[in-house]
Structure formats: C-alpha cells, structure tokens
Image (cartoon, rainbow, N blue to C red; front, side):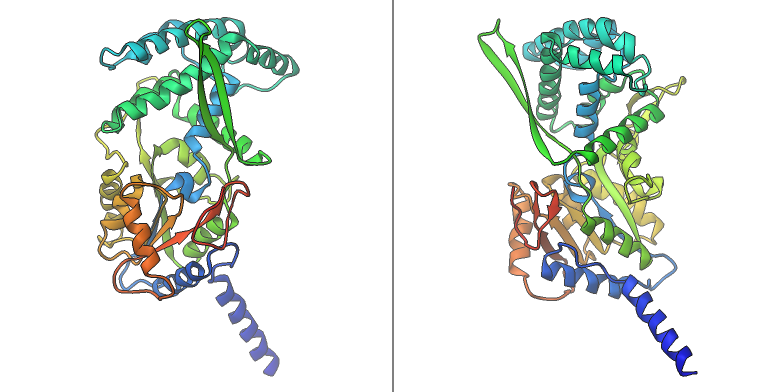
Length: 398
C-alpha cells in the first residue's frame, strides 16, 4: 500500500510539474506572474475555456514571417507573374506619383531580363526542385546589374507603398499581392513554409543590405532587411503550457493569414495550432483558385481591427469573454492590449517603440514586483537580437 501511495504521489508531482511553465529566459517577475495567471485560469467558470491572444511577428517569433518570405522569394526569383503583367500591377490603384511610376518602370524592365534568363527556365513552378545547374545559374544572375536593380528597387517600393498608404492598410496589403500573382493559396503556404525553414536554419539573425545605382550611377539606393527567424524556447513553452492547462491559444496578426498559418499550424516548427486559431488578413481566390485580392468583407486585423477581429472571430466562441492574456510588441498591437477591460496580463516584448505603446511601457514600470491585480497588468519582456532569444530582463539589447 505504501508503495502505491508513493507511486501516486510521484505521478501527481509529475502531472503538476507539467502544468507549470519552464523557467527558460523569462524575466523573473514575468515568469512568476504568468504562472500565477495560468494557475488561476486553468479552469473555466463556464462551458468554454479561457483564452490568450498573441501577435505573431516580433512577438511569437523574433523577426517577421512576411519579410522573410518575400526576401526568400526575391532572392530565389520564385515568381509566376508574366513580364507584361508586372508594370500594370505595380501601378494599379496608385495616384499619379512619378517616383512610384519610375520605380515600377525600372523594376518591370529588370524583371523582363530576369524572366527570360532565369525564371522562365528554372522557376515556372515556384516550388521547384534544386539542381546544380539551377544553383549555378542563380549565382550568376545574382551578379547581374538587373538583379541588383530589381531586388533593391522592388524592396524599396514595397516599403514606400506601406508608408504612403499607412492609413489604408488594406490597399497596401492588396497591392503587395502582385508578388504572388499566379499562385494558389497552397503555393503561397509552401513558399512561406520553405522560407521559414530556411530562415530558422540561419546561423544567426542578420540585417542584410541591398544596394543599386540610380540616376545614371550618380547616386545609390539602399534597403536594409532583417532576415532569419527564431521561435524561442520561452515562447514555445508558454504556448504549450497554456494549452496543457485548458487555456486556448490564438494568433491575431496583421500579416496575411495563410502565410502565418504555414508556420504556426505546422508540426515542423513546434506550435502546431489549428488553422482556425490563426486570425490575419484574409485573401480571396478566383474561379481558378489563384490568389486574387484581400478579402475586404472580412475584418482587416490591423490596429483597431485586431480588437474587432478578436471580438468577432474569437470571443464569440468563448461566450463573449475577454482574453486573459494578450501579447504584442508594436503600436499595431496597442488597441488589443487596452480594449479589453477584463484582460489580466498584457505581455509586451520590449523593442523600445515610440508612440502609444510608451504609455504601456510606463504603466508596466510602475507595476513592478506586485502580483496579479483586478486591473490589467502590463509586463515587459526583453530579448537579444544577436542571441535570437529572450533575456532575463525587462529591457532588450541588440
């Protein structure tokens, strides 16, 4: 009997240990508070589970999945769009803007060269197999002035569009679909998954610089691109621990939903969420199943749209309850961090942002060394970009 009692005791201990977060690199007070939250809300007071909502880029992961997908696509020239279709697509819906029109013209001319000398030969199917000939051809094309001009100007144009149309985010998202013209949703997910595997395998996170001459060589144009992805052990374990304690986990992202699903819903990367638990910018397909446009009838999950998306697509499945935990890193996450009166913890990955998020930085710093409160409690988590991991601090380092 004594042996049975000891055995049951050990099993109970093992079970309870599995319910607690691993220490990893959480800041000490954050680790304590998150465990308190999980313990308190592991059981629901009604028929539905409690739930947590996470931003994806630079919150769930370090760096940005769409940036890495587009980098991987441009670097490997994984396009399906035909040369004659590119210029009209790049200026479609753009008000008269000589800078954008000139960039689009240059990009289209460069693409025509790249299409005829590489893409039409090796990448008719953008998820093609690698070969020595293809690898050698790609290395040669990377040395061409046309590739350097195309890649740098296209990246610059993408940044320019998102800056110019900051208040019309759905337009910018719709415009960027020019990159994926001729692809199905499955093509895009495979592209994103391949890009994520490449980005996760990089030895370190880096900032890459692309440069090309402009104005007949008198000046140069440069862009900087953060490449590589890391999913920290701390964040992966937080997801797992929440789920193990019957707290549902959702992602609410301003990125294309299908791109994030390719990472978050795959067994390859360690999150393995259900597809319906990822809420992002939804895409329409045409009768031939090709991606055609952003679904503007759905909520655009950007800034205040994140709050609206959580209420419509998530809270409605939980008897209208507010999330108990929301995690974000940017001003795009501000609304979902403050709009839910019954939120218990707002977890902020501290990237030293300016703007509205500074209000929450200040609030977090005045709430240190205290436990859970009736009002929303904000906490800051630091990370090291160089290490690609969290650090046991509220501040981040490069």
